[in-house]
Length: 453
Image (cartoon, rainbow, N blue to C red; front, side, top):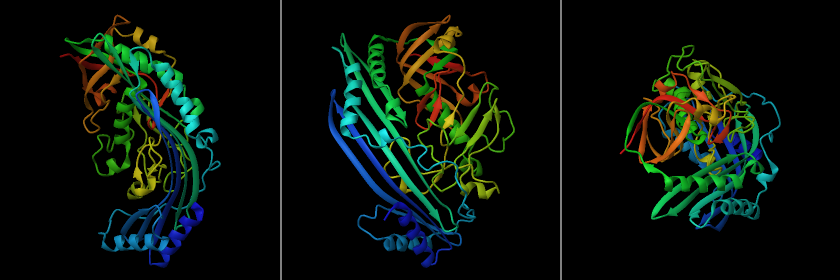
């Protein structure tokens, strides 16, 4: 059976078993992977799975289950979902599954054939290009992984919704280690793309090498700079800003009143320099599809327009609670791994958060900074989504003094509050990069503190 037949049978069997509504999500995911160990690609892995997630609803009681259908039948899955619905408490907030809506564009709009058909030989060639660029007499690549995936999913429900979408994804994670005069430095690079041919593996290898060597040469920071400007590489700034904004505008958090931006649509919550949209149809987005994971057509939703909060992001469950339409933000898929998306119900999440590129280069941004720091890598870039506070360990950075990069530093913290920082002018670069489910450039924020040992 193909995915459409599997999903239709699950829904039909559920209705025959007494479901008032039912929703079936069937997915075929293929992933080829190469793993690096001490400069050498040692493991090649190919995974292919067909999985289903079934939501069985009786009134306001909801049962959900999932299966790979390897050792059980469709009837077994339906019976288990029905049993779970029977013992579940009523969900007073549930209104209905989404009505059918016709998506725009072909179901394979976000599918790249080269990526979808990439085998271990293709990935081995790309990986060795990266390793060759990174390795030198004192730099090695201890570990890494490169994955190329394709995802084909079908969503069908008892209200007549029936849609398919097919897409591809590349994810890579690599580390470098430099040793020089009894000092050790680490480099970390990640890459995301929908198209394998868009990834410059030689460039990533060079960045790994220089990043690791920079850490070896860096000096421990022992001062305390207050009211400094932090210039954040796209990988670090997008992780901090994207995760915080994604939390604040999720209707799940807004409806639960845990978002700090609850009841603030139409208010200025950031400086006029800040404009962000959620684009489910992004040409670069890893979660882009013609429909979201419950069958609602994807769209571009303005979030912040010159600092003004324009909209929250809704899936059908949270939209129906406030009598609004879904914005196409019911998501099961992950931007790192195509496997296992069928195993949980949708969550109300951002698809691809995008910031428009400016006309400024990194050099332009640094040239405007009197005192600050340019950060290429944190131990882990994060900000508390509730309070906005952050205290991130700097692993690879360089001080900025009077518009110029000076001392390379390590052993320091960047401390501040991101909700407060974005209420002041934020400077963006033109170097848009894909990181996780975000497409964002270099970001410069003010009012931070650099704390040394």
